[in-house]
Length: 400
Ligand code: HEM
Image (cartoon, rainbow, N blue to C red):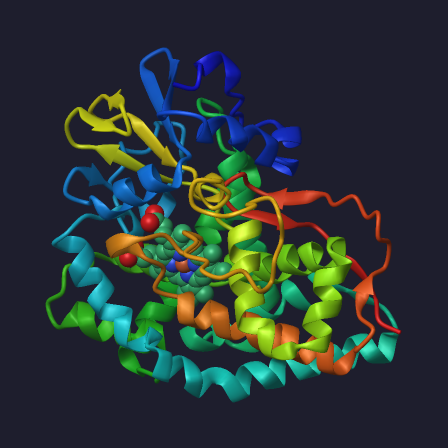
């Protein structure tokens, strides 16, 4: 068993957040470790086999966490639970409400729109002669796509992005501390915006996801107003920051592995497999939590009921027992059964959309800027967001 003393796991440490991977190696060496902080037990699941077993076992591992701590600010979201934080049968009902909007076919219909957004953003970068991948492209494309799906007018995209960023940064709040004022303001602003929008679309429905959810709600589904808000906010946050970070982390991996970048430029048909490797090697979602309904054993470790069971997806994706040479970024890796989109009943509903956005993004960038490369090969990235959603603050690129 990996000794708890060998494990360093501190999502609030900026150094840890900047590069958690060396710390994950200790999680591969033996059964899951338990860290005990007073009344709270944290079990760290870092081996691939254990991680898949936990994620597939929704009977024993609940996605419903403890109630938010008293210091958390919930505003109009009070008492809400979205599908990510629900178990069956509620989870199945909630998921069904949006699943038809995320089928590969529906996503393919969005492709021309996504290509147009990418092309417009690259026009602007080309005209400026400068290209920061994050500010000028990766931060903008996914929020425009999800806002379009939610029927939000384009002039509000920047506000949406700001809200989403603040909520994610809120994840860095140390337990027991009151939330920063900007988090409270963002919770209130999102709550007010969507409450008004829900009323408006109830009167005049559109062809968007919010209208579809209202219709389901009015047909007797289980959604309270707070649930509806939480649903829309989940789509807003899950649908933009993750994809932004796939594009950013993926480009950094290419830039740091010039032979792989050159290979992709020579053989663009490798792009789908390169995207899977970006997801495995430095995925946007580092960990997700489950809560055992009763005491349970995982890979030789007894985990008490209710313990925070952290499935460290990004560690499992580098487990040498599953992936040959896991520290190597190999765009032709095969097989590549990574867990970046999760596993089991909560498997990411947006995976087809994220894959398509990333494919359009890299194809468009490489077609427009064939010599695209990191501006500074020794670039030292600064990470933003929270430990759970890993992404770059900026990534300056050379385009000529
Ligand atoms: C590269 C991009 C993305 C990554 C890496 C990612 C990752 C994940 C992961 C790991 C989960 C499972 C979490 C768990 O089991 O606890 C998940 C669930 C989810 N994702 Fe994504 N996601 C991405 C993009 C998207 C997009 C574009 C959307 C929507 C537009 C989306 C919406 C959701 C939703 C609604 C769930 C909850 C599903 C459920 O509980 O059944 N995601 N995602």
